[in-house]
Image 1 (cartoon, rainbow, N blue to C red):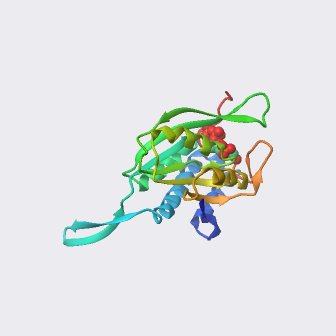
Image 2 (cartoon, rainbow, N blue to C red):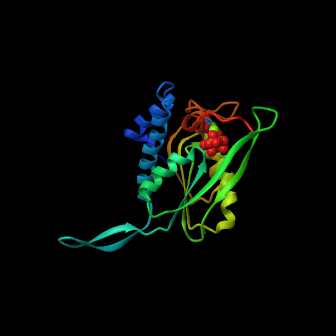
Image 3 (cartoon, protein in one colour):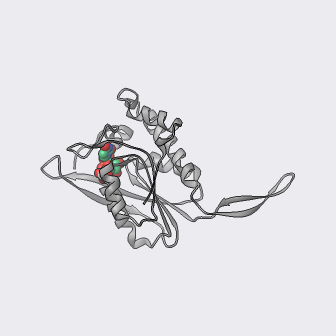
Length: 219
Ligand SMILES: O=P(O)(O)OC[C@H]1O[C@H](OP(=O)(O)OP(=O)(O)O)[C@H](O)[C@@H]1O
Ligand SMILES: O=c1cc[nH]c(=O)[nH]1
Ligand SMILES: [Mg+2]
């Protein structure tokens, strides 16, 4: 897998991630969602550098010119819930993309430390020969990313796969690396230290879905 950790270079991306982490600033859920969007746009811009381009003749009011424009047929898929603001921001840039949505949540049985990923809702166009962008702000154990990718398989073989995430843990990145084709790209805002015993990213941000949309009752 080709891992692009964008935080290794100083940029405004790190200021946005700092706001998402900050225990006081993150209480403002509108700002939290907006920071996901701002980061999503930066990750989308970085990802765009790896896409295919075709020469296109453009008529302006004053003449003509040739520009290189994106040639990929993109399907943008995000994982509900926390993927919603990330989806919106990627769609701002890849505005011609087709869209897919899939739900994944952690179902805890008796023990808060053990869970399985439940994939329920899925809406997806054909992926055959397309460029799949699979987006989720958090890559903790990596199980949601893998479970959703497996659920998408009946929709066809994408030619390229790009994973987009804001914060990852080394454990999840390793699992994803083992699961996905070596050609897969991972565009990630930053990589944290580790997972805690509840499989939350440390130092991380807390629960991205709750911070964006409010606490939910456990199912
Ligand atoms: O890498 P993993 O260990 O699978 O964890 C990451 C997942 O956890 C969060 O979702 P969550 O299950 O909290 O659902 P939510 O978005 O509805 O809050 C997050 O948005 C990812 O989907
Ligand atoms: O740290 C984590 C791990 C999973 N999901 C989150 O929202 N945060
Ligand atoms: Mg959550």
